Image (cartoon, rainbow, N blue to C red):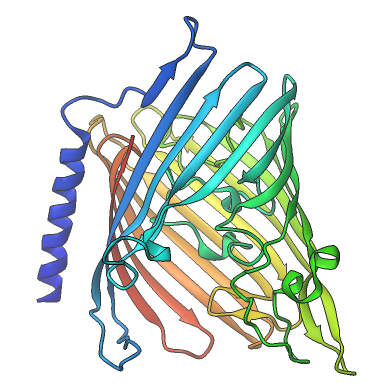
Length: 413
């Protein structure tokens, strides 16, 4: 019965995606010229991702009642606008909601999870032809390519969760308030920033103890000692040069470019976490994250398909034996994914199977966590109208493995 429901659901979502693309091709979105030559303009981008997810693990709510294993949700609903008011100045606004479902909706839309919030708001000034400075609630992150990932064009169904390595710990949903510098020197692109650390982070209620750090240093030690962090990411573009006009890194070019990049990045937050010392006093611990990664995306020849591949190694020091849920841990991880767009001459249907793997070493557990994802994308109009399907097997320490099957329909205008 459950298999029949999933098959029917997949058919409905495929039909919805096909309907959404309409009878005309995508021609560049909503861009409005403010002068005759188009050097002054504003652009509006909107996208939505709808999920149907089946989880094979029994989950009970606070009353002890069993929850449904098949659920529907709005994974993302976003609007982004930016305006180039002159050749030296740009302003960007990004707002929306995430992961709205039956359990966090509100009857009149006033619940925290039901409301829109700003994902980004920043202004940018060009210092020279290839260098700029900006300030605000921004997404010019450090650490890795995936910590700067766009959600419009991912290869996999969603981003590797551990790669958004500071989300909710020191920032608001992977965005810090701060000042950034970005640009390029030859084939080397860079982005560096100094930022405020959030006071009310995900671990704000973490209890101090002598055996494990809690990541709420600013809340405990104050803004003077733990209020700022610095971050940076640098990648060398060996082949085609990627755009760094906006901070969002592309997940898959679908064979339209030939890209090979090597990157390295960091995040450093002095006294970001706190722990009880042997004498009972509170001690600050520096949070330090480092990563190296590689990205390759290229066509394989005339009508021969295209390959996308990514790999990274990252070390995470959030403080002694730090863990939060099954998402963040002091330790290290390797992550990789690869996809192959099958050869076709049909521009209205492209198929791209993929595989992903994450293995994390967790200091506090003296054990590992892993996730294997196997899936595929059906592109009806490139990333603008697509259907994604993924099976994931997740294992955390000595807990039983969890199997999750997800279908996503996405429209991006």
